[in-house]
Amino acid sequence: MQNVKLIIGANYGDEGKGLATDFFGAQAAGSFGTINVLTNGGPQRGHTVELADGRRHVFKHFGAASFRGAASYFAEQFIVNPMEFMREYDDLRAVHAAPEAYINPHCRFSTPWDMLTNQLFLEKNGLHNSCGFGIWETVLRYQKGFGISFGAFTAMNREDRIAYLRRLRDGYFADRTRGLDTQDFFFRDELLCRFEQDFASMLLLCPLRDDGYLQHYQTVLFENAQGLLLDGNSPEGQEFSTPSTTGSGRVAEAVERIFRGADVEILYVTRSYLTRHGDGPMESEFTARELKKSLPDLRADATNTENRFQGNLRYGMMDVDLLAERVRKDFSRTSHNAGNRYRSSVMVTHLNEYAGIDTESLARRFGTLYLSDGRTSGDIHIF
Image (tube, rainbow, N blue to C red; front, top):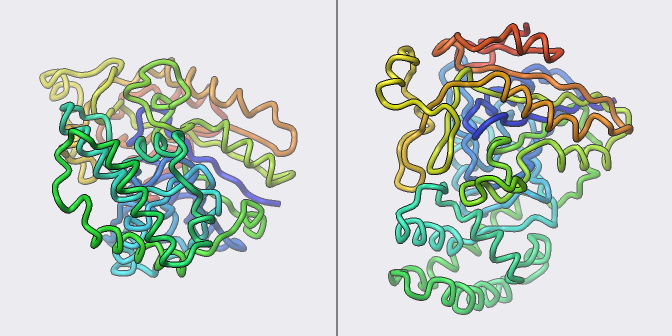
């Protein structure tokens, strides 16, 4: 019987999903195989894991349970980026053995021109609503018919791949960036050849597998990116949302398709206070003066530093009733599924910075409550 976890951000992202995934990876370390599924978004995610021995890594293109020996699997809805994959692969090898990785052949992939186009539009419009990794640009390009799957690109030889990328760059991207200051390097073949080389290297390290491959593992950790308040399917705040399903619905559909009789825990992760990166509406946001008074123990966030694409991390007060309603609404989409057994739980992180959240109310509403007052999985306690 498979042990399946769905790790979902309950708010605007940055809740502690990396910590939660590492915690479950540590719990399953002695089991018969663990695989960590990256379900949505792309390498714009930044899921931080810190170990008791001082090692720290911000996982983007690999699962956050990698330190625990889990393999990574890129599901169909995850957007891969070969250049970012190879960069992080090298970074991980410097601190830990790089994990096994497998990819669904239907995955879409980002190019360096998606990233550059994204960044050029952000700078032109003075917006801070993206990480600059080109996720929206990649989705838009595929919607317009200018994209093929990772598996189809794999089937080409090197010369055909280079020719395809050159047509894409000189056709679609030339039109898309008309009027923008693309600089000379945008159209240099060095960038094109570097991308193709990284693609070929990624392919050697990352075999193609369909979703049925997940049945080989006893523990399967589905690690979502972003949070419920950034869901691209929501009619509210579309300009500032993410082009993916951030809740459990699409992942639960995959679970129903792949498994039967599995024990499925959907964990919703929240900080004890509210955060949001970039522009867009935010409930109960603190002013600078309110922030110092309400969160005096707030610590520097080494992951969510200010950058020119997202700006500063913003803070607000958590409304437990609204949080519980978001979780209830999302979980209701899966609770009727009959093929597997589902239960919901909540993890509250950063309690060492603010302990004023009503955890007793959350404990009454949900069967299991995980509480974290530190930065490592050893700081998590089950309430």
